Length: 118
Image (cartoon, rainbow, N blue to C red; front, side, top):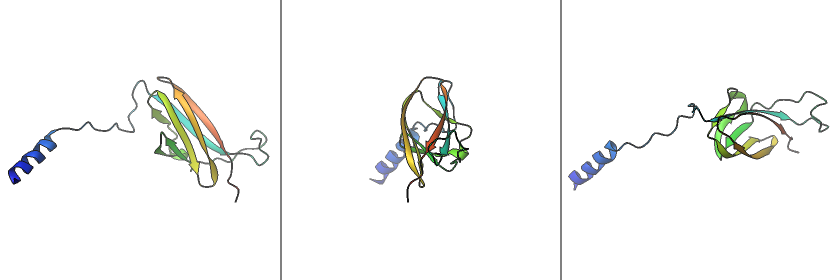
């Protein structure tokens, strides 16, 4: 019995599983996104005063946490196609968007976040 288990374990170890994609790797046909988040101005018009940045807002793509916006200044590479983008922060209402990206598309987003009323 031990020999059979050992043989099975050896066979499982020798079978190579495909390694997951390196999150830092950018393929030639990937789309690249850049995000900034700003607080909505008090009067609701972001053009009347300089909006405060929210660099610690969290970026989620397709339900997976990517990082805080302040640390993602180099952009985020994603495969072409449809994606669900979320910007979350405890002090602001979350922002959700469904986007569809073409191969090699480059896009910048400035997201306006409204403060949560407390």
